[in-house]
Length: 141
Image 1 (cartoon, rainbow, N blue to C red):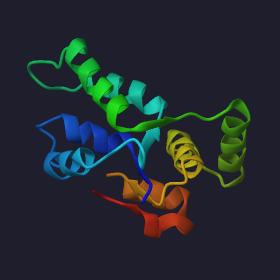
Image 2: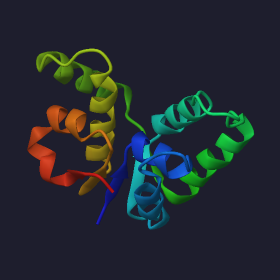
Image 3: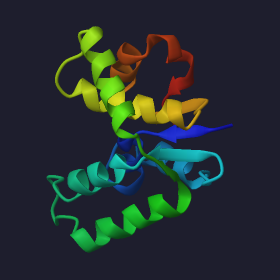
C-alpha cells in the first residue's frame, strides 16, 4: 500500500517531546522507499520547524540534518512541476482556500502524484477540508 507522510507526522517522529511521538515514530519506522513518500518541500519545512522549536536546549542544525537524511533514506521525495504548482493554486483559488491552506493543498497534490492510498497527518481537519472526497484515506498514524 502506497503511503504519504505529512510534515506533522515526521516532526512528531523526530521530536521525542511531541505528544504524538510514539505513534509517529512507529509509523515512520515501517516506512520504505518503495511504498512510502513525502513532498520534497517537507525536507525544508521539517528543517525550519525543528530548528525553531521553543525547546531548551535548541535542536542544533546538524542534528536536524541527520533527521532530514533519515527521511531521504526511508521516503521517496515527490516534487511538483511548475504547471502542477499552478494548477493546485488555481484549484485552491476556485475553491476559496486562503492563507496557509495552500501548503496543505500542495502536499495533497504531491500525495496524488505519488498515488498514495494512505495519507498520514496530525492535521486531519485541514486535509479533510481540502480533499473531503479523500477523507477515508487521510488518517493519523
